[in-house]
Length: 64
Image (cartoon, rainbow, N blue to C red; front, side, top):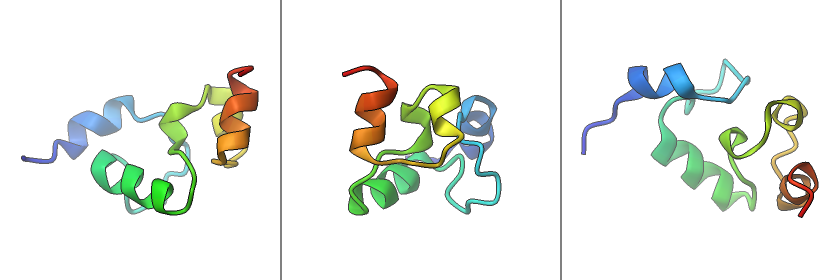
């Protein structure tokens, strides 16, 4: 499958602009899950900006 990084970047919600995985969803998801985290695109904008990618932060951000 061909990566469509330029297209993906247009909708990427991650504000960590220096990340080498930004816009490469398969690498981003794999990286965060291996660290027991979720990628920034899973969070609402206000919560994403904290850079806390934990499952607990995800649950709190979405009031789960």
